[in-house]
Amino acid sequence: MTESTGIHDNAALADLLKRLREGSLTTDELTRLREILDTAPDESLIPAIDEAATECASPSMDDLERLRSRIYSTIDSDNDFREKESPTEEETAGPIQAGRSKILHIWAAVAAVMIPCLLGLVVYLWIGINSGSGLVAMSTKPLDKAEISLPDGTAVNLRGNSRLSFESSFGHSGERIVNLDGQAYFKVAKDSVKKFIVKSPGLDVTVHGTEFSIVSRSGSTYAEVILDSGSVTLTSAKQSVSLTPGNTATIDRHDGSITILPTSNVLKADWATDELSFNNISPDSLVTEIEKAYDIKLSPAITDHINQRFTGTLPWNDLGLTLDVLRYVYGFDLPYQAEK
Amino acid sequence: MDSTAITAPAGAPLSRRDFTVIYDAYADALLHYCRCRTASEMDAEEIAHDCFVGLWQARDAIRDSRAVKSYLYTAARHAIVDYYRRRAASIVTELHCELNDAMLTDSGLSTPVEAEEFRREVMAAIAALPSTQREAINLVRIQGLDICETADKLGLSQQTIKNALTSGCHTLRDVLKKYLPLLMVLLSQNYVSISEDTVFFN
Image (cartoon, rainbow over all chains, first blue to last red; front, side):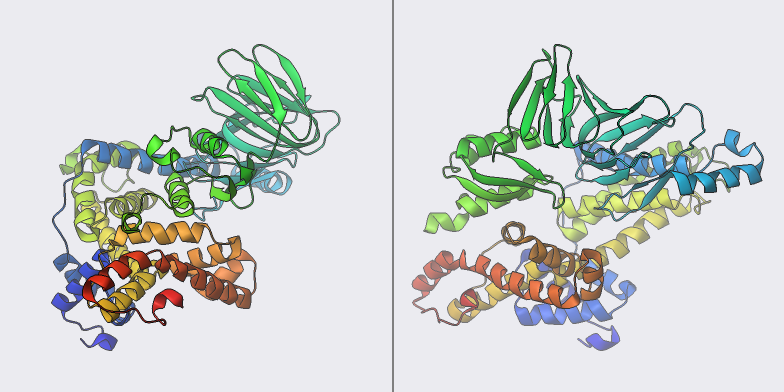
């Protein structure tokens, strides 16, 4: 093979690609393959890739529907942005110069910035201070996240598969109201006059200035609020209670009951690093927390091996990786174990 | 695909309904095409996803429905080339090759460790690394960013990134130790002794 010129033997390259997939390359062969891939133009590599193609099953209907769902989720997020960014026909019907002036003014005054970090996209939304009613909504895809700055300075860290919305007249009345379906961390800007209220399925959280996280999804039985500082009032269909720092409230959405327990070392979401941190957690509690975080039920084939206390971190947004970490830590379900 | 199924007038950008027609017409074949060339259902889905999303994002520029199929397959071919480049550059592949080297050197056997299983093992070990090492290895040795880009992205100095990579890769080589029992069995069957300086103890 003469790699430097990008000319190579397709059959030999196809063999290297096959063995790369199988995991049977040696280091020398990998070095050779890297040289070819790094120097040859795409067009000259494609024939070898075609030659290395293998027989595979056609996608099932489920496969295609899952892919369709993922694609539409992505482009819908894109659409939310584009629709906000691009003025509607009605909006452009007015004086163009006045509209531009207004947008520039609004840009300086109340820019809301959303950064879906995993995709590296940066999306800018702006809303009008003096505009009439209208809903501003932001949503994240599964495993994605967004950092949002609300017009009053409140910082919201929106987790995957979540939706946050508020009226474009946000903060003009005596209350600052946002709607949440999903998971978010709020760092609320202090305002002694205007209450900040998070409305979510089966639960309203009222605050003046505080930091707290909330998980409240329309499809889940329970909602959870973890308070870091300040104070909040929780209102369900059944009762209204105050939550103080260091405590966690669990709300049963079916009957509206609210249970408050100390935020122990059981679970703490590390919002900066996308991790769930555990400190000397019991095996049973670890299983419970993972099942709650991912809304799943672990099989005995896994839980039977989780038999020692655990201290460490697990990703909050990757179940496969979480299970791999557990397999790695507890040393189960690996072929060589049988050999041991 | 019957191009008449697309409602957009000639020269108009694709509508959402057009996009649905396009998906129904090409998704099956495109996903199958990617699967055959990656031999990975998960990776093929990622590539097909990116191709369709790319088509949607470029819809304002695509004025001829006959160009859609060409766009999708061209995008898929380039994405698959990039996929192999990233995979070859990955720390996972590098460690697997080192394992294979040890197997061949000490036992004359090729590794029986399947690529996907090994990948999951290494990814789990990466997840267990301290955060700076984990981020550095993920960005540089998995996603293929260079040191400078990674330093900017993480807000750290280039030297810190280099140190994190060195430390992290050293720790990851411990993953190979998990396969030591298997190698020992293979070696005992072949009456070959393992040397102290194999990759497992690097």
